[in-house]
Length: 203
Image (cartoon, rainbow, N blue to C red):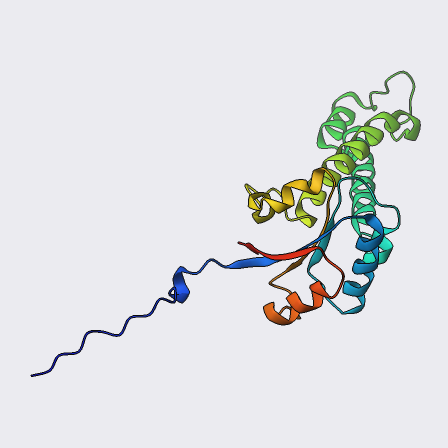
């Protein structure tokens, strides 16, 4: 009777292989990074970013970044604070149950310092404070939400090459979740951008 040993392979099981976060391309100067960013933008990639040790003027335009909607959302939150401040004071000064109860008991409204029941100049401090409160808190909260923060860790921070992003290197990262991402094709594309090195970043 002949027995056969189970077939074995040196390939790592698919479940055990590390997932890829994306591909990292390294550049040595801002000019080459700007040129590469324009090509990545024109190629139609959506999930990608540039990392530089200092701000590079015009990089956002080269990347095709549009204006954020955050200012409009913060304006709406501030306007909500202004409206709530007015309604709160108008209600408590001229429309609340306690005020009408006072009128019913005493026969006249209780005027403070001779001000009318609805006095817009007197309402301004509270309206101003609620405007600032809602605008400031919504600005911070919505900024974190739109940026997908907070992250407990980020795959790029575990990459040794990427550590020079805060020193003297410039990087472009195309994420694997991009609809146009195909590892071999994208890697070939990134090497054609003039990158000094291209490597995969594990998720």
